[in-house]
Amino acid sequence: AMNIRKKHPELLGKALADLAPAFLLFSSFLIIEIFSKSQLMATHARFLLYFFGINFARYVTHIQIAHVARETYAGLGYIPTLYVLLLLLNTIVSSVRGKAIFDELTFFWVLFFLSFVSYAHLVLNVIRQFTRALNINCLTIKKKTN
Image 1: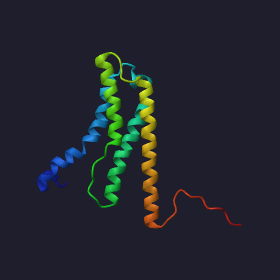
Image 2: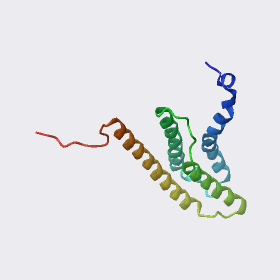
Image 3: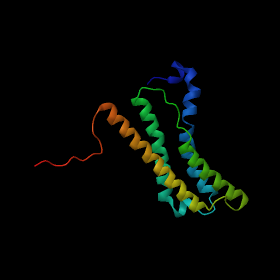
Image 4: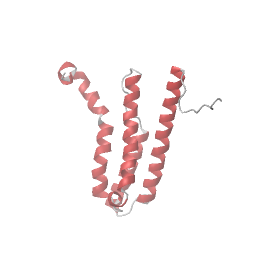
């Protein structure tokens, strides 16, 4: 295996910076488990996994798009990390102050919905752009001819 650190040492800082959103997503589980006053992990573990799964899928989708387009990965952007950061901020504030900025469970459901809608929007736009570029049909059903 090629050691990228030896071949391109100047890219190490950028590579580590590109991994920051993944580290945030992975470490968020632990932070929410420790600091959540409403025990979000114990009461809604499945939907919390869906929430992080959707945000991680968005992260991976951006990497895949950059690879397919043969462009340099430009980073995740603000939206998915913003949702996770808002959830973490609300959870940590509730632990420190004793009261959350927003009701933890309601806020989680709002962020879950926004994550789902923004990821669906990304996927549908990517599909639309690829089908236009390749001049093919996708997600369409043709009427049967007799």
